Each structure stands twice: as structure tokens, then as C-alpha cells.
Length: 191
Image (cartoon, rainbow, N blue to C red; front, side, top):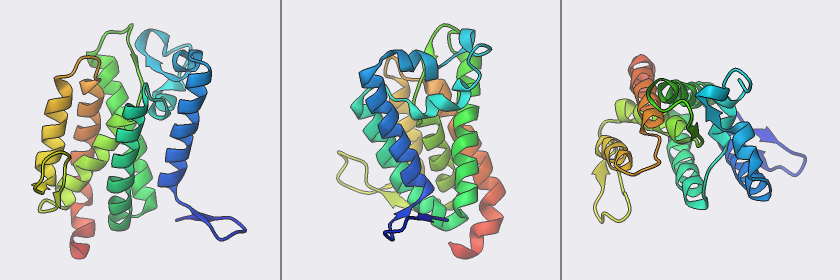
């Protein structure tokens, strides 16, 4: 599914998500208070319930944003061709929300979580199940790796860094793996 304007340009949901994320990033540079308004925090969830979704569009640095958007673009483009736009959107948003729930359950109630990483890990989890032999390049490694090695390795390495919401990554990955097993029989004929 794509949305075309009168000029013939095509705006896919992946590009729409990326545009929103870049726009929100610029807005948070102008007003850092937006992070508090849109970021997810357990102690503020009842006052700001929208943050269970809005935090997926907020990023703390240009590197955080670029890493998530590049991964979203590559994983999302490939996955959309395999399972369609509707299934992609369900996996992206439900993976992100389940990642947020894992974060709420496993992290400090006073910390704020932002970023699309849980949703992106959901995409990676689905692709890991649907395309187990897919090989990818991961900078700076000069040889292709099996996707599952890149996903699990990426999760483990990122979990070692301070201020990284490994709980959200884990929740998204768990959802993505489960969704991959549900979808596996539907897309087997395309692989």
C-alpha cells in the first residue's frame, strides 16, 4: 500500500514513520520538554497514556535516530514485500508496544524510555524466523553474517551499554519471533 500525491510520488508507511521520527527529533531539539511529554515513564503513564505509542517516534540523539531508521528501512522494506503492509504495521507497532510493556515491567518506574528499537527488533525477529538463511552485512564486519546471528548478537552487544533499554529490545524481539512463527506457514511459498 502506498499513498500517491498529485506529483506521482509514493509515500509508503515506512517512509511516513521515518518522516515522523525525523520531525519529532527536530522538534525535541527545539524543545527538550517534548521528550517528557512523549517519552514513556511508568510513574507518568496514567497521566500520559499516549506515551505507550508516542515514545516510538522520539529519539535521544542523531545516532540513535539514524541507527533505528536505517534498520527500519532495510528490514521494513524486505519484510513488507514478504508479508504486506498491513502485517508490517501490526508487527511494528505491537512489537514496539510489547517492548514498552517489557520496559515498564523490568525497568525503574522513574526512567523514561524513547526510541523505535523495540519495534525494529520485532521486525528483525520476524525476518529471523521467515528467512533463516538470509545473510547480512554488519558494519564493521567485512563478511556477511546469518541474520539471526546479527539480530541476537546485536541484542546482546547493545544490552551491555549503559542507558540502553534492553528490556524494550527484548520485548520487541520476543513479539517478532512469535509473529514470525505465526506467519511462517503463510509466506513459506514465497521463500
